[in-house]
Length: 89
Image: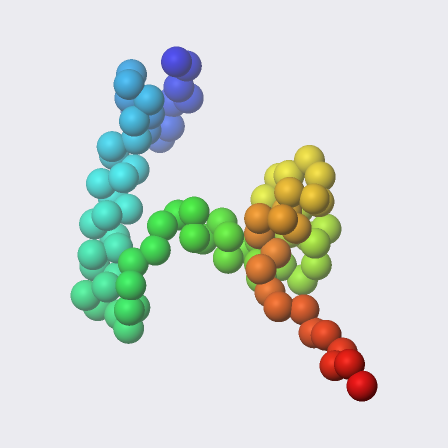
C-alpha cells in the first residue's frame, strides 16, 4: 500500500492501512467537544461530509463540493432535505 507523507514527513496511514494517529486525535477532540459544549452526541467525519452535501444550495454545488463525477450519486446519498410538496385537492 502506498501512502502519502503528511506534515513533518510522517504518514497518517500506517503499513497496515490504519489511521491510528487521525483516529486518536478525532476521539480526543470529540470527548473534549462533548464535555465543553452543548453537543448531545458525538459524530464522525463521515457525518461532516453528509452535512456538507445536504446543506449545499443545489445538487450541482453539492456534487462539486463532494468531488463526485456525476450528480446521481450525490442526490442518492447526500441530498437528504425534505422537498416541499403540494397537497392534493
